[in-house]
Length: 63
Image 1: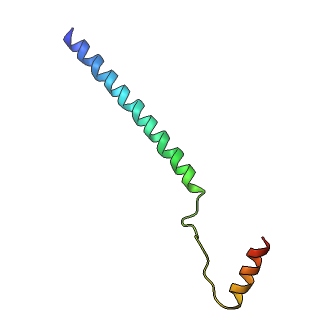
Image 2 (image 1 turned 120 degrees about the horizontal axis):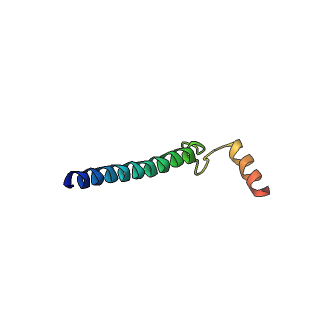
Image 3 (image 1 turned 180 degrees about the vertical axis):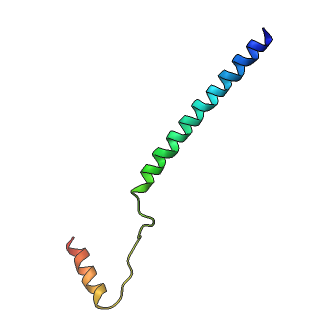
């Protein structure tokens, strides 16, 4: 009888571990897919000088 109880405890705890591992894996895969579409970096501002700066400022003013 004690062997049977020990066997059931081991099987249930192993099953629980596999279930939790599945949840963690699902979370990692969903996070991975969300990150795939994002750029590696984000441009905060563009710094220019000279003729291009005047043209960019006029475009921003009309937008």
